[in-house]
Each structure stands twice: as structure tokens, then as C-alpha cells.
Amino acid sequence: MRILSSAQMSWVDQETTARYGLPGLLLMENAGSGVVREMERHFEGLKGLRVLVVCGKGNNGGDGLVVARHLHLGGVATEVVLMARPESLKGDAGTNLEVAQKMGVPIEWIVEEGNWSDRLQSRLAPARTDILVDALLGTGVRLPLTGFMMEVVRRLRRFPRVVAIDLPSGLDCDCLGAPAHEMVAPVSELTVTFTAPKPAHIFAPAARFSGEWVVVPIGSPPELVRESGSWLHHVTRAEAAATLQDFAREPEAHKGHFGHVLAVAGSTGKTGAAAMAAQAALACGAGLVTLAVPDPCQPVVAGQLLEVMTEPLAATPGGAFSTKAFDYSRVADLLQGKTVVALGPGLGRESETVHFVRRFLEECRLPVVLDADGINACKGALDLLGRKEEVLVLTPHPGEFARLLGISSRELLEDRIELARGFAMERGLYLVLKGHQTLLASPSGQVYLNSSGNPGMAKGGSGDVLTGIVSGLMAQWFSMPATRDRRGKHDLESVITLAVFVHGLAGDLALEIRGDQSVMASDLTGFAAEALRRTREGSP
Image (cartoon, rainbow, N blue to C red):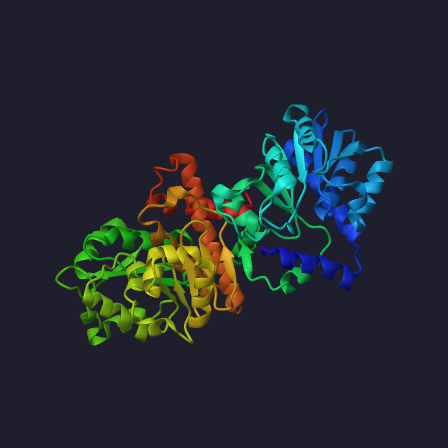
């Protein structure tokens, strides 16, 4: 689901009328009636409730007038307070004001003159209203607010149950400007926006002002959204489910149809990271998984993993991977017959292991999912990450990515989307930047923000599980008969975003059982199967 800025949304609306002939009045009617439908759903009916619609003079106010008319005609006690002179409403908003007046909708107006403060005090009284519909400002507002309009917004904040049209009034649609403690807007229980979500619905701190938000189509063709110039996406469960349909298994399928993951991971004291990555690859459907570990670690992981094949490689005295593992074509032989390589969890940072990773990347001709210390090993050797022929997926947390770029974590987080996007495009790789709203930046310049996951997943090992899930789904996608001919870049974007979504959903399921303090990384693997099932079936 693409995220549109205020300018992009305005362009889509204009082109809908100019190119396809849908008049703005019809779009406004569709918007207002869509809000009423969502209110009926959210509140499980509106009969017996008192609704106050607060309108501005722009199109957002016009939408609110359509809402008021539909509620009034439906027998809902509805009143409108217009924060402008009636004659100041022009175009479609003015037309809807005239229609509402003729149909008997109770409307009064308040402007910045005379005893306006007293009138606001008496008219915007929460005790007289069950639901407030905020149709004051919309997406095109210029901030900061001052004077009369700021006072109106402050009074809207006092209402306990708010429905916002497009976004709560007082927010910048594009999430620019004031920090959280300076934002003044009502907190909406339900926000109804149109055609596509906006940055203010997705990004904190503005997103904290919307409880549930929904997108209502109003008639703009999907191709206009694609042509809008937006490269930012919000990954939904419906989109993840659509991708998962491609992974349906034929009755005659066998393990060879679902890929063979080679996980190169672990070191003495960090075998858990290796085991979780390998187990997660199996849990999400890989046909075969082989786990290569330093020689001293092999008995440990073999005893933990019944379904995973294990291979020992030459180790340093400290129990990490040694470059001697390349002797006698040992690594080259290990790569034969594999589909995808997961490299990095639990490797450690011994200098010889760093050289091992760099040589591995130079010689490997398979798709690689690079994580953790595999990424750290590339600091100062970014040429290794400019692969032209093979697929490379990086899965860093912010600290690892910041080290790779040579900047602080704070600098990274202040501009994480642009930095991730630029890096992925420049290097021709897929970058999964973990954290709140884990994102995928692709070589094509698209950025996908995940919608699942929770703070309980902020535990060591969660990233190792993600590496396994990404590797396991990629191995299937590269191997299954149904997907063998579908290896375009955009399809791979969908596969990786599916993996990130399933990982987050597994965390959400674990949260329901354990609570946000007690979720363990191993829980994510345990709940991966249920996460896949719920995604496939569209279960809540």
C-alpha cells in the first residue's frame, strides 16, 4: 500500500478529475459516505448517539458536511459547527453546505470576532456530544496554528471520542515540523483517510494521534497512485497474504522443490544464534537446511537440532571461523547444491573471521542474506557489497548499519529512510533495517515499512530468527516450480517483505501469551507456523 504525501494526494485528486472526468463533487460524496460507513462499523451502529461535526472552510469541511447530511438523513442526532463564515465556502464544499442547509441539518458558525471564545466554550462542550467528527483542517494545513484556530484545536482535544477525517487537525500530513511535545491535535479513536495512507498515519510522533486508521477508496484509479511518484509503502497483511499464495505446495511436491539453505554462523559461546537462524529457515518452509559452524561448535548444535544437517569448518583457537576453512575447496564443496546462504549470526569479530567473511563474499555465487557480524566484517570494505549478478540481502540493526556508514546511530535514525534507500540503490542490494517499523529498501528505490511487530521483540536473537525466515522463504521462491519463472526484482521485494511481516506477526502472537517483557527470540520460531497460517487465511 503506497503512502502518499499531501502533494501527491492532491495530484491524484486533480488527475482523477482531469483525466477520467470524475467531478470533485462525486469524490467528496464518496469520501463523506465512506466515513459514515466506517463509523457504523467501528461504533457498531450510531442510533441514539449525538454527533457533532466541526468543519473548516476547505475540502475537509466539505467532507464533514457530507458526513453530517448522511447521518441526519439516517436519523442520527447530528449538528454542525462551521469555523468560518458560510459565504467563505467555495466550490464543492460550498455546494455541500447549501445541500445540507436545504435538508435541514442544524448548522451554526463561529469566527474570530466578538465573544468567539465564549461561543467556543459553550458550543464545543464534550458533555453535549457522544462523538466528535473532526473535519476542520485536513491535509493541506499550514502550520503552526495560531490564535482562533489553535484555540479551536485545543478544545477539540477535550472530546473523549473523536473521528478524524483524513487526519487529526493540527498535524502536518507529511510529518514535518514540530516534535512530539509541541504537537497540538485531538487524539482520534478512528481516522478515515482516502485513497492511500499519509505519512502522518504511519510515522511517530504524528501517528500516535490516530488510534485505528482506515483507508477508504473514493474512485481514484490505482494507476494514478502508482504514477504519483511515491516510492514509500506500508506493508499490510492482505499484501503479505497475496504473496504467500505463491508458496502453495502441489500434491506431488518433495523437499527438493523448496530449496536448500546453507547457514554459516556461530562461534564458541554463540551457537544459539546459529541454531535459531537454521531452525527458523526450516520453520518457514525451506526443504533442507545445512548449518556450517566452527569445528568445536558442531557437537553443540548437532545435539540441539534434529532436522538440520551440520557441517564443521576449520576454527581459530578462539572457536570462530578460520580462513583455513577454504583449504582443499572445503567451502566450495559446501556451496554445491545450495540455494541461499545465510551468513553472519554469532560469528564474532576475530580478525581472521573478518577475513573469512570477506573471502566468502568474494567467492560465493549464490544469493546471500548477510547479518550481524557478517555485516560488521564489511566495514571498510564496502566494495564487497556492490554485487552485480548475485542477490544480496543485508539485515542490520541501526547500530550495525551506522557502523557500516561511519556515522552515529543517532544520525542514522534521524534520516534512516533516505540513508537506507540511497545505500540500497547505490549498491544494488536489498537492505532490511530492523527496529520499530522494520523497513526494506530495494535496489529499485522502493521502501517498504512493516506493519507487524512490537517492542517485546527487542531481545538478543530476534534478528537471527529474521535471517532464517528471510533465507527460508527466499530458498523456496528460487526453487519452487510455481515461482521458478518469477524472478523479477519486484517479486523478490514481495518475498522479503513477507518474511519481515511474518517475523513481526510471530512476535505479536508471542506477545499475546508472554507479554512485552517476556517474549524470547526462540518464541518467534515457535510462533512462525501460526503466523504463516494466519497470514495465509487472513485471520486477525
